[in-house]
Length: 116
Image (cartoon, rainbow, N blue to C red):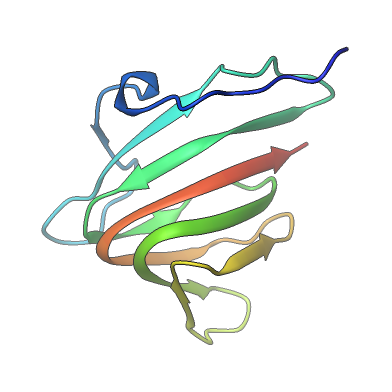
């Protein structure tokens, strides 16, 4: 497979906003992604993700690497209960079965790669 470049995809690359699957309270977070820009191969999915403020349970059980380029949020893994503060410029590795709670404090945008 040859390299793929995604030139300034802009807002048009995103799907419509939809509510998260397991919200906690109000407001219900809405998310949208820009995926399908690169073919899914070897169980790897990548894209750009954007979330509005709110709190919910993480339901993805696969490994994930993310780079946050906008916003501020926290993630509290069920395994440790220790809240991780995340802001623009941070990278996060979530191992397999990293269930927990996301709390989006301000509009947050990340590039992600899900493996498995």
